Each structure stands twice: as structure tokens, then as C-alpha cells.
Length: 395
Ligand SMILES: *[C@@H]1O[C@H](CO)[C@@H](O)[C@H](O)[C@H]1NC(C)=O
Ligand SMILES: *[C@@H]1O[C@H](CO)[C@@H](O)[C@H](O)[C@H]1NC(C)=O
Ligand SMILES: *[C@@H]1O[C@H](CO)[C@@H](O)[C@H](O)[C@H]1NC(C)=O
Ligand SMILES: *[C@@H]1O[C@H](CO)[C@@H](O)[C@H](O)[C@H]1NC(C)=O
View (cartoon, rainbow, N blue to C red):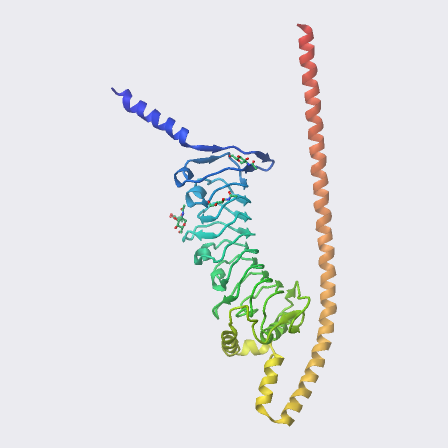
């Protein structure tokens, strides 16, 4: 009579094993990367019982997993990096306090949800060639992010304050989206951000740029609908801070300002935000006071507008003369800076060549190691085969 519950228990276990769906690696690479191809995980019930082979990195390609759910993430506690590539993963409900890298490439992703909660360990999130239109506000819980690449999606709106608490954020790539507006509060400080890429969007300005980006080194800005006064003011500031612009527009239908096309009015096919910009621009100039005045001179187009209001020709003439003098001084300084930057550049190139050389050496060493190993393996095999035939001969 005692045996009955035990048998029941066994049956339960059997049932669980039968229910559990095991997906072996189709391919496994040294360094413990497991490739799983062409699988389907559809129902929510099966998420809890899904099993993969043990591996630190899991690559799931060309698979149909309509929702990659929280349960599924929790079911992979030993995996450090997940790549979803191709196939059909339209929703991600992200929740993990162990995963460090998540890459979702061309899976038809439309919805990204992130569990609110401070335990996420994710430091690299790459979502490319997908259809996300909005980011969840809960993205700000991904405190540990250092690389966030959301390029080639359909994102329309960004609030830069979402990234404020990501103390390690070094790279933010939002290029190739449909972003028409970015907001930020005056307290915005992306304290460590080095690379900020927003080319190929519908932006007319970026609030608190570059003041809110104290460590910025590289930007990409081309192919947007920049507002001319904004570009003029921003250009001076990024020059002073030696932030490098890594791209430029080729042909402009209206004006060009230092390699970027800009518009007095936002083109009609873009939601009109011109008024909004002017207000924010004014606030910006007022808000920061001394600091702002120190870094920028007034952007030229704005100045022109003010002059025609003032009316006094003599004043205009004096101001223009003063400006010419200023420009001459600036030009001299620029020539000097250019030389310095060129020197820095060639130093960096030399450093990169050194790195490349040492990487190549490492690679060669590794290849030799592999060859040696293969040779040994083959010798072992020959030896073993020899033994076997000797034994066979003895019999
Ligand atoms: C994927 O798997 C399904 C069945 O599960 C099969 O019919 C199909 O041919 C497979 N596709 C590829 C590209 O392997
Ligand atoms: C994913 O998250 C969304 C929003 O939180 C929720 O409505 C949905 O039910 C979740 N789906 C699964 C399969 O967990
Ligand atoms: C992807 O999923 C959607 C919805 O479940 C379905 O309509 C579509 O046919 C799927 N596409 C592929 C390539 O499996
Ligand atoms: C986060 O971590 C704390 C402390 O380790 C733990 O008590 C809590 O349950 C965790 N929350 C989640 C959502 O994992």
C-alpha cells in the first residue's frame, strides 16, 4: 500500500520527462557556443519545460518562437549570451539576472517588453533589422548596459532620460530608425557615453546636445532634418570639445552647415515640430547661463535675425567688423587644432596597427597549436589502428 504513492510519483516524473522538449545543438563550437536551427516553441506551457544542451552561448537561428517569454529566459540560467537570428520572434518579454548579451537580428521583432526590476545583468543589447516602433520605458532598468544598438528598426520617439541611469553606457546607436523627436530634461547627463549614432532618422534637433554628453567622442548625424540654427550652435560646441563627426550629407536640397544638410523649416512630410524646437532652443540658451555662453558664440542665422530687428546700421557694421576679427582669430586657432588632431590621428593609427599585429601573432600561434594537436591526434589514430591490426594479426 505504501508503494502506490511512490509509483504515482514515478509516473509523474515519466510524464514530466515526456513533456519536456529537448533541443540538442545542431552544431557546437569550441568555446561552448551551441547552434540550434529551425525549431518551433509556440505554446506558453512548453516554455517551462524546454531544455537545451548546456552551453554558455546559445544561437537560435531560423526558428519560430512567436514570444520569447520570461519563462523561457528563466529556463536558461547558465547561458551568458543569446543570439536570435532570422526566423520568427515577434515579441520578446525580457527578464534575466544572469544574461550578459542579447542579440536579436532580423526576426521580425515588433514588441520588446522588459520586466521592471533592478536585477538585470545585461551589458550588451543589439536589436537590428527589426520592426520595433516604441521602446518600453522599463528599458531604464537595464542599468548594466554598456552597448545599446537599436539601429535599423522603426522607432519613432526617444526620451534620452531613459538612458540616464545606465552608468556604463558607452555606445548608443539609434541610426536607421524613424525618430522624429527626442526629449531630455535639463539634468540629462550620459556620463560615460563615447559614441552616439543617430544618422538616418527624422530629427530636427537633439535637446541638451552636447552639454548632456560630457564624455562624447564620436557622433554620426547625417541624413536627418536638422534645424539650421541648431546645427550652427551645436557645430561650434562639438568643435570646441573635439567630438568627431563620423559622417556627412552628400547633397542638400536647402542649406549645408559644416557637412550637414539643414532646414529653416522642417519638410512637409515630417510631423511639424518647428515651433517646439524654437521654444526649447530658447530655454536652452536661458537655462544654462554662463556655461552655455562660454562654449558658444551666438549661431549666425539667429544673430542675423536679431540685427534686422535692432535696425541700427552702424551697430551692425561694428558688430560685423568684430565678427570678422573673431572669425580670423578662430581660423588661426582652427589651423593649429587641425595640425594637432592630425598628429593624434596618426598616433592612433599606429597604435591600431600595433594591436592588429599582436592579434595576428596570437592567431598564428593558435593556428600552430591546432595543427600540432591535429598532428598528434592523427599519430595517435595511426598508432591505435596499427595496434588493432597487429592484434587482429595475432588472432
Ligand atoms: C524546418 O523544420 C520543418 C519541420 O520541423 C521542416 O519541414 C523544414 O523543412 C525545416 N526547414 C529547414 C530550412 O531546415
Ligand atoms: C509578454 O508581455 C506582455 C506585456 O507585459 C504581456 O501582455 C504578455 O502576456 C506577455 N507574454 C508572455 C507569453 O509572457
Ligand atoms: C511568423 O509568425 C506569424 C504569426 O504567427 C505567421 O503568420 C508567419 O507565417 C510566420 N512566418 C514564418 C516565416 O514562420
Ligand atoms: C533581485 O535581487 C534581490 C536580492 O538579491 C532579490 O531579493 C530579488 O528577488 C531579485 N529580484 C528579481 C526580480 O529577480
